Amino acid sequence: MPNNYRIAKISSLLKKEITLILQNDLENDLLRSNFINISKIELSGDLQFCKIYITSTAEEAIRKEIVEELNLAKTYIRHTLGQRIEMRRVPEMTFKDDTVLEKGLSVLKLLAELKNKKHNQDSKVEGNNKNV
Image (cartoon, rainbow, N blue to C red; front, side, top):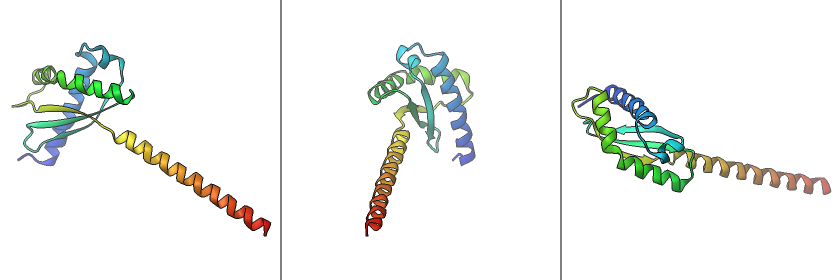
């Protein structure tokens, strides 16, 4: 079974090469017209499967279309990877939408709202203390 260092190294190589394939080799207008970033690759311990998480600046509906298009093109991407890198077997790929960024932004928004509520409550308390 491969060690974590090897998995991390192969994940990094896959990320680099898949990014190049997405930028240069795919002839898809949807993919070319939207900014796509590979945020994370989860590679199985036996190097047979990988989940590729992507982020995009596009809206949620368009991101879902992008993920669908990438999953349709995964055979081509895998074949191209096989020509570019020396691996006994290129892993099976699944593209997924990475929603961590949106979740993080919603948490920050909630924290800002709580801070504003606390500030407003503190202001009201100070105003009441001045009147007494």
